Length: 239
Image 1 (cartoon, rainbow, N blue to C red):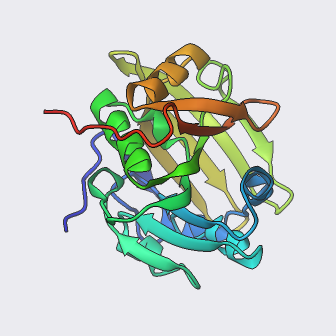
Image 2: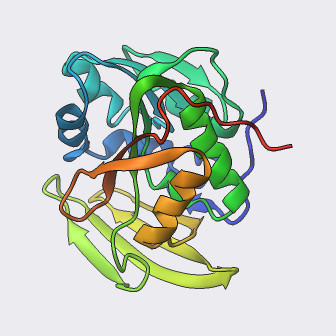
């Protein structure tokens, strides 16, 4: 099972850098923030979650502590080696087919903004393929003006600074975004491709694969709960 090299993605800083530009050591340091609380409030207690793109377990571990069962998927073996207490699966999300379904499927980390529309559809089809008929998909999308309100920065309570340095046009409606993470003892950067999606475009992308929005879970509408548009329906793979 090969690892997909992500064109246009790169990173700098100490330690291993994954093919999509993520630094493994950085992601072991980043706090979970409010994400586990958002998830816990949106799904049944004790649900079995499929977490797509789990990274080093930043959100996985707090969800396990809250009593959820988690199957954690990532294309980076180095990231998965940091995950404890969950079943782990080493695979690109686009190729994943576990032959089973889950109460909850999570697609976080703004993965829905993949620069290639075909990749985005493949990611969402993986969500549908693993979704129980009465289950839900939790998706994290970019905030309003995320690509235009740059540069910007915030200082995390944990003592590091996050800067969105730039978002430069890369063609076909895609931007090349550079972020920097500055800790007292180290600095990492990550450059990645991202396709901005309006609310209408986002909901249209869900509809393409047979999903519909149930609710926007946060005031900034960055976290979304979706379900099958037709209960029990299946989505056919493209020819």
